[in-house]
Structure formats: structure tokens, C-alpha cells
View 1 (cartoon, helix red, strand yellow):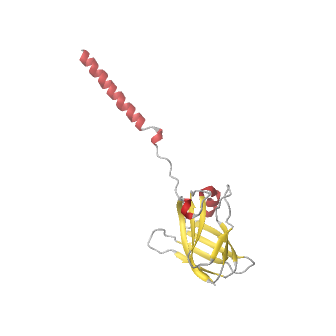
View 2: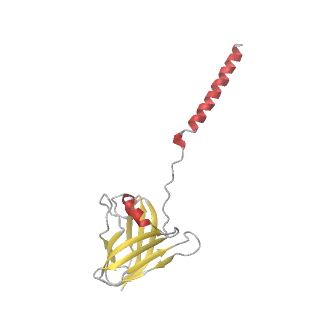
View 3: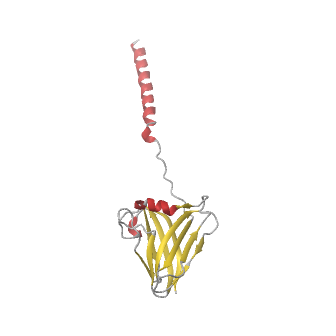
Length: 188
């Protein structure tokens, strides 16, 4: 009789142990966290307005099919030597109807974003005067670009999500690239 009672206790304890492990295994802490999906950026338009008037220079990248086989459309540009330009960047998701303006979200979440400008070898341009985020670090959706002497080369615009701020440039910023586009630019 004593063995029978011990076996019942053992069965009860085993059942209780299994039930508690199932309860613990299904706790709320194990629920997956919602995924913060990155925005789809199909289009980057960089508008350079010459100070004092003149024709705007438009640099544009458009990739409506993303990783699909079609090559992106890229519009490069020519700058005038010795001219300073006011620059602005607009990002769109043209996969949506109507197109979604991603720049508005970047500016609203300005502490989590930063644009970087990389001037390739041989190109005589400088950038400065980028707009700031809410903590007075660079955001860069607007900027100033000065064209120096006659030259040509690459100009790259890179948007980084969650960079370390302040930083010493793209190499020390960390974070993740949301988009990086390189344009061929000539100064004439």
C-alpha cells in the first residue's frame, strides 16, 4: 500500500513538473517583439540650387523594382566651378500609391538618422552647413556644396540608421545603411 501511495505521489509530482514547465515555457517574456521594418526607399533626389540664381542641378537615383533584374536609373550632373549650391535630399518610396515621402520620417526621427557625403578622388567639391537633429548633431537632409576647380569624380550620399552621434564620419558612425548612392559629377 505504501508503494502505491508513493507511486501516486510520484505521478502527481511528475504531472505538476510538466505542467509548470509548460507554463514557464509559454510565458509572455518569450513572445517575439514586433519587428520595426525598415522603410523601402526607391528614389533619392538631390537638388542643388546655385546661390544667386541659375539652373538647378538634379542628381537622381530611381530603382522601382528593388533587387529585381532591372538596373536602377541614375541621373548624374554637372556643376559650375566656383559656385556654391544649396542642397536638399528627398527620399521616396514609389512602390506605394501615392508615393510615400521617406524624408519626412527621417526628419521626424532625426536622432536615429544621419546623411554622410563622400567626395571621391579627383572631384573638387566640399560640403558643409548640414542641418541638425534635435540634439544639435548633423542630420544632413539639407546642406551646402561648393564646386571648386574644373574636375570630375564620384559623389556619394549615404543615409545611416541609428549612427553613433556625434561621430567623426561614416567610418566611425556605426549603424546600418538605409541607402547609399554614388553619382558621377563634373565641375566645369
